[in-house]
Amino acid sequence: MPEIPGESSRKIEAFCRDLALRHDLDAQTADELRGHLEDKILGYLSGEVKLTEEDALLLTAAHFGDAQKIAGLLGRWVPEPAELAPRQRRLRLAAAATALLMLLGLPACVLAIAGGFRLSLEAAGVFAVFEAGILLSVRADLLSRWQRLTAAGFLLPALGFLGLLLTAAIKESNLAAQPPSQALGLVAALVIGGASFIGHLLVLGLLVLPLRQSGESGIPDLLCMT
Image 1: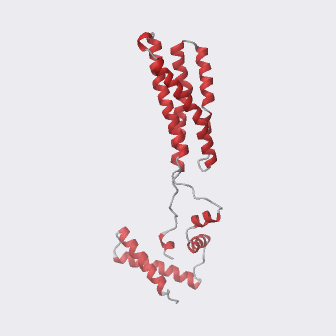
Image 2: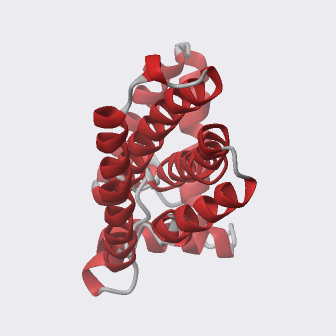
Image 3: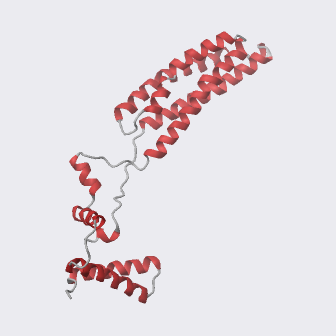
């Protein structure tokens, strides 16, 4: 029966010793594990154990090292950032909350202040035009810098519009001289408008800030020893 080469034998021994420390294995269990690994390798070397498709894939990954980095160098695939899914969820949540404030909250404030339902609908239509950036931000591919920057650019008019509205409302507001319903509507408009302004800033930040790349290769420890 063929023997395992000395270098491979030392690697198996080091691997089993590391597993024993990680999982608090006793000496007998570690020896049994080493025996199983040695039997498997000898079976492969002698041809008694047939190489499966899964085995071939693992060996190929071990032979070429970190497949993600190589694919990135070849330009065929870029590793998906680990932060992509959480960033997408936060972006959608912020965009949905901001759109509700802008398209429902502010028109309701206009209705309370001006008392005209038609004027409230017209205000909602105007606000909807400025919410094009929110729609683009939800549909943008966060891996595409061009799409992210385009959506961010469409958010700027909404931020400028809200900034002007808030500035004018603060300067012209005189709550003491307003009827109770209008005064309440004006306070609500300031609060909702401010929250909407912050929401747009949050969406803008989620679009502009770069994604952190994942450094994990996913190759098992034993393969990394080769």
